[in-house]
Length: 327
Image (tube, rainbow, N blue to C red; front, top):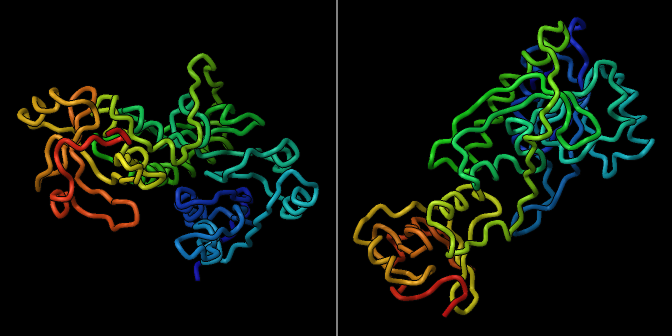
């Protein structure tokens, strides 16, 4: 079992994070010899079809590393603040913990609190910056390491790193890439903050945008939008909550993988049909007309069924059928 090594020349850190995104940063702190005094994450939750109670990824990593774990159901209590004070952290580092820290916790560490955020702040403050950067069709995003205050991602910026978004990258892939980038930037940000080579920079409020939580409705395909926007929606909501459309009878069809149609003959055909109409069903994909262009569905999953490649099931989808709950 890998243990956190203690180097008293480096600040003692309480790390707060929950999902896979946070795990590389936790491991990097340990690898670089920062004493991680404790890990704080969200409580275990039921997952999967059988609702098995499952520890979040950060907890699993902390147990492997031999680090104490706290999983408070509420953080705005004197009891939790007292628990943190007992660890006497010099610094708190957060990465996708899932809750805004109140003032009494922000004031505990002597050196302050740092957050690893998955966007180039002040753009995409909030809960789902990775998903929305793809849904919005952005070509670039990045990581911001910032000093925390009581606002939602409003603190001063310490360090940023940029990352291109390839046109076919999905949110899961981008999340993994940003997690690695954040972990690589973290030691530099901490050291630069401590030796004052990195100067905190105020965010430009006039450029602030917000990335709201995504939910199942975020993945609902509106065929009256352009095909390029629908392609971004499919990849921006993958793997969760996932993009979906409906048959005329209301049953759902999940769309796991798609691309904008390039075939000129299919594009000409799509112009002759209302948005949402299946204009072709062939081994290369199921093609559906959008308001501009058309979308090839490459991997789909009917309600109650398995995920399938379109080439294996295209024969089940007649041309002329109008998706989106429209007959």
